[in-house]
Image (cartoon, rainbow, N blue to C red; front, side, top):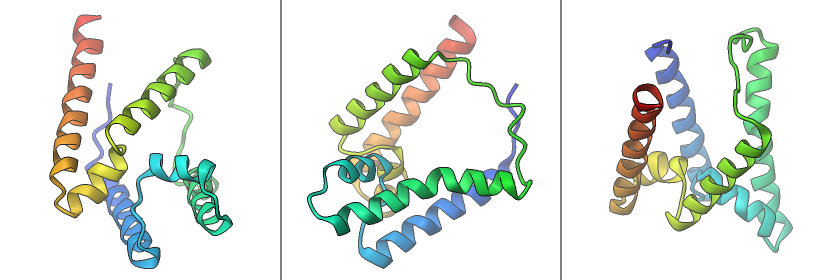
Length: 141
């Protein structure tokens, strides 16, 4: 069963949007997580790598901070996939975001905010694929 929590989603979305705006206004970069991760591994200059590594470090630190503050109880969350399945899934996501010239955060948050037609098509594709996956998992398998 899925818990419907619109206020939590709205608050989280607002914080993600705020972070994306701060990154764009602060250093003129788009907050696409896949691009940030890829360029953190391949950037030739230390300054280009440092902000990307700090951004990536902040992602799990935010969850740890929320947990430490007692704002979220993670005990009800399970992760049934095996480690090999998770690695293959991560590889597929990486390949898909490379072919799609960005990931959900880059296209869905930053691209749509800039009225990018490519991001509109990519985001519609993400949503259709997600809906089809949920349908198959819940009603077919």
